Image (cartoon, rainbow over all chains, first blue to last red; front, side, top):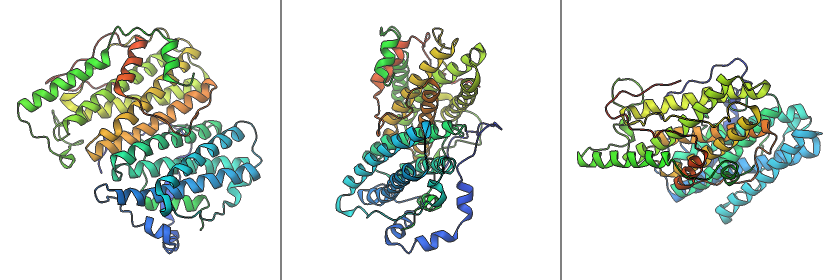
Length: 209
Length: 233
């Protein structure tokens, strides 16, 4: 898929990028994740999918559901365990509130077909403020990339709803980056992720099931 | 200041310009002209974004996409010029100066990308007067927040209307970058970067009304016709 040529702003002060490259290097995880029914179905989402349809929207919403479950669980555990104070605490609390509303909306959209809450092991990511902020940046960048990656696969009606969520994820990403003293918007165009990359990214943060 | 309405209140509310509306009517006339000449507008597969020279870009793009891209281009011109002028005024310091430099470079990159995509169909850069908001840090930040929130709502309103997948993919990737910008500027200004769980779209009409209320656009953009695209940055 071609996009207009936009060069990345060339600036040495630009903090870390999303850890996409790192994620891509860890191929083995996918094989294991694919044995889990919900995730196995998600991995069947192609990069260049069939024309948008209600059925395809539902598959994509399952991916989004997994993402929102992960975010809610991540912020809940971090608020309990990471010893967050000041700006980081305010951020985590606001983000949790938003992600809960996203999760509720996606669950409602999926109705009885919504997948159950998966299990997580966030490990050190929720044990200190410093680790939390790094993981939060990675998770929010992954959320933005995951939604953006599905935009052309969604029907227009569902795209309109997804667009109301993705920019809030982008605000979260920039917010926590700014708190951490990193460049809040490192790329002129946010780089999308495929469904596979998204699932892999969530596993990197702590999705287990 | 958490909404466009506040921004409109902050500035004056007289619509004396209508520059964006003018842009749209230019685009509509162009579309009529295209239909008149019976041009076939092929699908996304034929978009030639890179490579050959000349008036290639808009060929192959659905007419409605060209219209939306020109609308987005005016918003990008507005933002790019705003940051460029702020940088030149040397009024900004510290983290705000750093952020403005990076965001400005990004908005200029967006302008370049749209000019390349639209080729000879691109509207020209209007003339701007930022009413002194680029000359002091607090007014700069306040205005930056409003312009970025506006851009997010504008892209969100138009994205589902885009037909060509490569254009849609680019637009959503820019949309989320504008959302990062507004959060960044809000953080620097000292207000909540993300207020609500859902960001709402805005129609062209409401975007146009707010932009007009700023009086930032002092000359109306024109179609370049057969001229080569005007590169900026």
